[in-house]
Image (cartoon, rainbow, N blue to C red; front, side, top):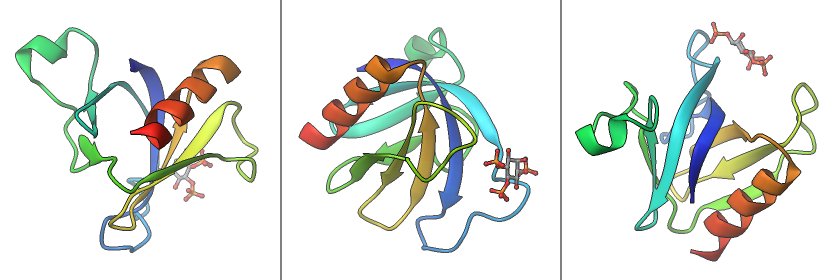
Length: 109
Ligand code: I3P
């Protein structure tokens, strides 16, 4: 599964709240492969192997949980991703079908 999404970091892998100034939404191209959610600036960066510049560009999905973020009302079609190490992200997808596809893919690996 791959596609453009918007991402917001909420909780860091050390379980601390993502610091102010790093909590913004960012558009990126996400690719789920081998239980890792890779994040690229755009689809053309995949072959070059250029990830987004951030400490969150390869999120391990093993024992992670993706749930629809019904408590987050500022944007539509958003899911929350909680990883095994305690990090937390919000991802906004294009529509409800995309949202469900991401949830199914992440939760079934
Ligand atoms: C954040 C940015 C986010 C906002 C977040 C801000 O600022 O404005 O859009 O989240 O609010 O901290 P920055 O870009 O400087 O990191 P929302 O869009 O969800 O409001 P938050 O601190 O309440 O998470």
